Image (cartoon, rainbow, N blue to C red; front, top):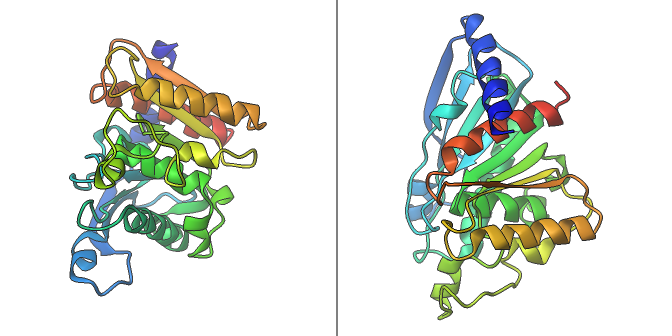
Length: 267
């Protein structure tokens, strides 16, 4: 099955490249309205898009770093594939609260819904993804509808949620800020698991090998998969990438992302 993901992705990107499409990147677009100095520093995004294509799928990409570090970048595996890619910076713990991190993520998604068609995207084809902390933000924004509702966006209008090795319980950096140990599982309003629902967008959960991942990350995602299925959400899928740890799983995970973008859009 892994081979099929590779072949599909290579075919998609080779076909697009054969058309000699040119791509452009615009950096450091401001998506937040806050005048706070730190918000003005961090609430920026880069957008990468094909200059002459229209109606393209879009992937919003949230970087990892435990919600305490990291910076935006356009993943190489998403380049030259006929897609718009939006790479997002957001404010970091412990300088802000986790609610502010999540609000930044929602604001960036809302910006994309409102602006992406100027760059050849289609707002009905917006996918959200990210690795580790970025995967956590992906799941939270897509499952807890209140974050996007603030910006008059219905989370159910997202085409798909594809978190790479994201936490399904409350994030460990948030727990640390509240005096809770890394190995003390917690499920509260800041856990994707708290917000399982039948009517969510398609959810594709991808983790590394359960024996190599961080802190039971595979098992968290497996529990989220099970609970989503139990509430009647039939478009939740779970993939474990054998032989790959937390960081290394990102490379093959992009092949799964490409397949599901194609599948969900019916292409």
